[in-house]
Image 1 (cartoon, rainbow, N blue to C red):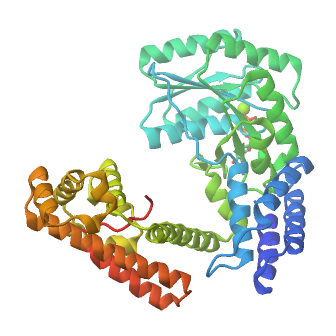
Image 2 (cartoon, rainbow, N blue to C red):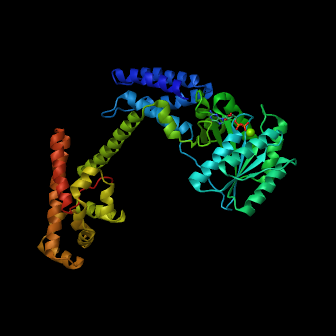
Image 3 (cartoon, rainbow, N blue to C red):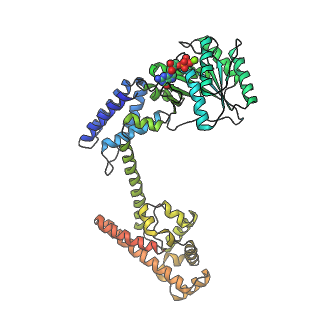
Length: 463
Ligand SMILES: Nc1nc2c(ncn2[C@@H]2O[C@H](COP(=O)(O)OP(=O)(O)O)[C@@H](O)[C@H]2O)c(=O)[nH]1
Ligand SMILES: [Mg+2]
C-alpha cells in the first residue's frame, strides 16, 4: 500500500548514505524536496505535505553529527519520528464504557466496508477483549443490507438485532436496551450509507446519535479513495463528532496517503485498519510501525536511537566532569550527601547512572548507613571547619566524633577520603586544562570510580 512511498524514500536515502555523509543545508533541501514529492505521490494533500516537510526541515538543518551515524541516517530518523507524529503518535485502542455496555456507532459512505467491518470488529472484540458483542442492523433502506448483517452474525455466532420497518434511531435505542438486558457488553450499530454525503443521511445519523447515545462513533473510510476519504472524514467529523476512523482496504493498491493525512486534517486518529476481505483482517493502527513500514528502514531508526542513547550518557559524564572542576570543600561534600539522600537510596541512584559508573560501583558495596554516618560527621563540624578542612586538628576531630556519635577513626577516614578526592579533582582539572589525551582522562576517571566504590563521594553525575 505504501509501496511507492517506501521505494522512493528508500532510494533517496541510499543515495544520501552513499554520499560524503555530511548533510549540508543544500542536501537537506534536496532530501526534503524528495520527501515532499513522495508524499504527493502517495496522495497526500499539498498542504499536509508542506507542513510535514517544513517540520522535517526545521529539525534536520543544523543537527549535530553523532558518532557512528551518518547524517542521512539521522535524517531518516527525523522523517520517521515526524511520520509517526503525523499519524497520531500512539496506538489508541478502544476505551470501554464504565456502565458495562459500550455502544459503537459505525458510519460511512456506501461501499466503504462498514458492514464487513462491523463483523470484523465483533470478532476482534471477542478475541482480544473477551467481549460478547451484538450487531444492530440500522441500515434499513436496503433489505439486502439487513440480510448481509444476519449472515455475518450467523457465521460469527454473534447475535444480530433487526426490525422490519421502523425508524433507525428507535431501532438502535431499543437494541441498546435489549443488549443491556441480555448481557451483551458491546453494541455495534451498522448504519446506512450513501454514495455521497447528503443532508438526509447526516440528519438520520445525527438522530441515531441523539437517541442511541453511542460512546464511540467510528467512521469507516475506504483508503483507496485517498484524498476523498480524508475529505469525507472531515465532513463526518464536523457533523457527528467522530471518535476515530477505521481505514479499510489498505491491502489493496491504496497509495496510503489517507492514513498519513487523516489525523492532520481532521484531528481524529485512525484506530483500526482493514487489510483484507476476511473477517480477521482487522488490525489496530500503529503509527510507529506504519512509519517504519513507510520508510522500510527499521534498522536505521534503532541505530540512531542507540547513538542518541550514547550521547545522553556522554552528557551525564560531562556533568560529572564539570563537578570535578569546582574547588571542592567539605560543604560541597555535605551538600552532595544530602542530595544523594534526597534522591532516595544509593542503590536506586546507581541504577540511574550511566552503566560504566554503575558497574564500577557495584551495588552490593553501597551502604546507605555509611552515608548517614558521614553526614552526621559533616554536620557536627562548624561552617568554618567545613570551609577550611586543613584547620581541623586533633582536638576538633575529637569534638566532631563525640558530636556525631562516631569514632575518631571515622572522622579521620572521612577527612582522608576528602583529601584524596580533592587531590584527584585538581589532577582532573589539570588534565582537562592541559587537554591531555582521552586515554589519560579515562585513567583518572577509573581512579575516581575506585574511590566511589569505597563509598567515598566525589561529584556524582547529574547533581
Ligand atoms: N480488500 C478489502 N476489501 C474490503 C475490506 N473491507 C471491506 N471490503 C470489501 O468492500 C466491499 C463493501 O463492503 P461492505 O461492508 O458491504 O460496505 P458497506 O456498504 O460500507 O457496508 C465488500 O466487497 C467487502 O468485502 C478490506 O479491508 N479489504
Ligand atoms: Mg453495509
